[in-house]
Image 1 (spheres, rainbow over the protein chains, first blue to last red):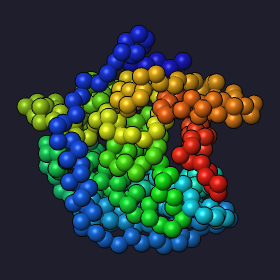
Image 2: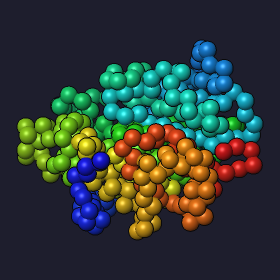
Image 3: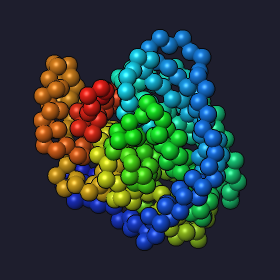
Amino acid sequence: MPFPDLVHPAIDTYESAVQTPADFVQFWASTIAEARALGGEVSMVPAQTTLKLVEVFDVTFPGFGGHPVKGWLMLPRERSGKLPLVVQYVGYGGGRGFAHEGLHWAVSGFAYFRMDTRGQGSGWSTGATPDPVGSTGQIPGVMTKGILDRNDYYYRRLFTDGVRAVDALIDLDFVDAERVAVCGGSQGGGISLAVAGIDDRIKAVMPDVPFLCDFPRAIRVAGRDPYLEIVRFLAQHREKAQTVHETLRYFDGVCFARQSKAAALFRWR
Amino acid sequence: MMDDVCPPSTVYAAFKAFAGTEKPWWNTSSTIMKEVGHSRIGNRWNGLASASFKRLILFTARAEPRLVRAVACQRQQIFRSKDNG
């Protein structure tokens, strides 16, 4: 039996106290515009696998700052016309994994892309994308990486990568640009919410127990990392609490959800 | 057990922040998985689609999320075409 941290009737009326910054939309519009202005090439190299039903491509696309970001693109080997596209983002600490993993969407008839996560990919699945940007001091992990400045915060780069992944794929001749969905679990769910809130080309978002949501409450009630990275950071930098919370408002899934017009399928456990 | 990595209330807060969730669809893993098992999923999701399914949150402690998600996507009109989906 699930045991939520809020139960009925309190959960029925609960709403996040997070206020969307007045310049939230502009902040993200300018961030994405800057990344797009840098341009860059997309490369798609056929991956060597033994798969009979799925074609896999090793994709590299320009993300935030034009930095190269990796991902696996998987297509059903037998296909005709344009395919709906599902872009998946990965949970905290993980990377894109191996080319033969996560075949469900492709064998179901979708074009499927699993984006690597810059600077992660050594926790529970492998990655191949560095985060070549320095930042101020941080707790081990990425939750507080650059957290004192919204422009330097790690998730500004990662969310931008998420939008640029869609940019890289949406105009390919086998992709139906009118049927693009994003998904992911935990951190991947948080990224998918962000992308759906920034990019109105996204028609459906499927966050699976999304992370990076409702930060003020999350850091009070979460029992484990990664939210607790922020708690430990603030234990040492108590005078920075207001600055940290101000930065996090620009990266909160609640604020992105308020912007999105996509259909949404959440899972909560 | 509570998900103490992503507290449920914070997930719900994001869900509720979407416009159009004043009357969200709720469901349980046991209901959906039972209907998948009995091949009644089509009727179930047709019902959701005809009700202009726009937002859905699933309480799924043990469900196979990919299966549920795939079915949900395929039932949405935005994913329908003559050729695929």
